Image 1 (cartoon, rainbow, N blue to C red):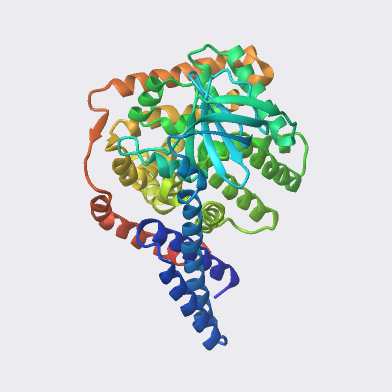
Image 2: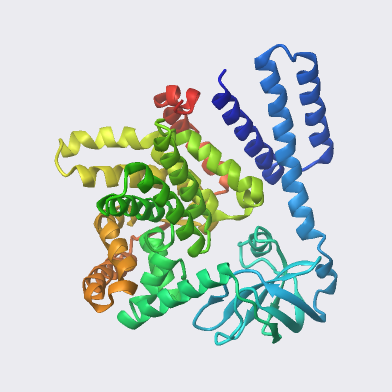
Length: 476
């Protein structure tokens, strides 16, 4: 067993521990038992490398379970919860870029030794990142919205309570490098709004800058029904397209290959930070970074390994993502589906296309693979899935790279690039409007998640059987 294989087993054990604590049992006794078993195996069989690895796997499982429980307990036992429905006055620091929508602004405020509070305030609020503010308002514990666990969703961001439209006083404004990045993002957004119509600019802002607060609910609903929400949201495909375009541009400017790779890694990570570090973007940023690093040291890329490492890295810093962040779940399941079944569907579609329209064949293979693996999550979360999604994706995805490229250039070149960009955006929204209005666009399904998993077991077995060698070695 190589060191790289051992690393993957440790990562899988760590993620497995978080999964056990998230969905099955979160018990300190189980964690201690796992830790003891691991230490015994390591101590008694220190000369047997395979058993040593098993021992460390037990320890990593216990570590994952402990980390999940520790982070969740900090939210559930936060001292601010005891002030529920009471008026409080406190000082804190704005810890992220305020999300400004058409009706309100969302602000994350860190209170020293008391955690984080989500504050809803006026859309014209002058509050900025890193401002020290004094807030007076009524604290509320977030409640479930229909079947949506809003409390858990906020818990992943370290938020235990919310305050709606309090009195806010800016005590001190302090400039910082991060704040300047957010100011730069604000300028980019203004440039987009200056050069595009009010109907199209919110779409491009969401697509390029990750700001979907300015899109109205009707547009968001149409995107969901048509199965094209991922085209607008900052996703893994956006990061990959951005990094690939940047790499080619740097090569065109005369940089050596290694210099272009280093530059692409740096600017890709910068872009992920600029758009607010969504789960799918962070995962893609890590995978792209590992891919470029692998090329720098003349190693092949390991798709499944990079996926496992990306998941482990993200969950190490925030173990609550696995249970409470649907975007995280969908992102990884989509990539897993593409890795495991993408080649199968590509080969199957080859009998239809017979070497023609290769680009369309690959888009269809990736779309089918991703949708099959994310379908149980979508059904269990929303109670329906988009039937029209495959067709709408085939029609729209070919223009996505060009639309992204033009969208990034709009703030720089203005109306010159805005005109063709507007044409592509109008085409995108035309497809969204048409596909979302079809009577058969969605199918409602009311089945528990466990039933969906059982239905999927035969398909998962076929995926495992067809890619067994790749799974065994995790592309190693």
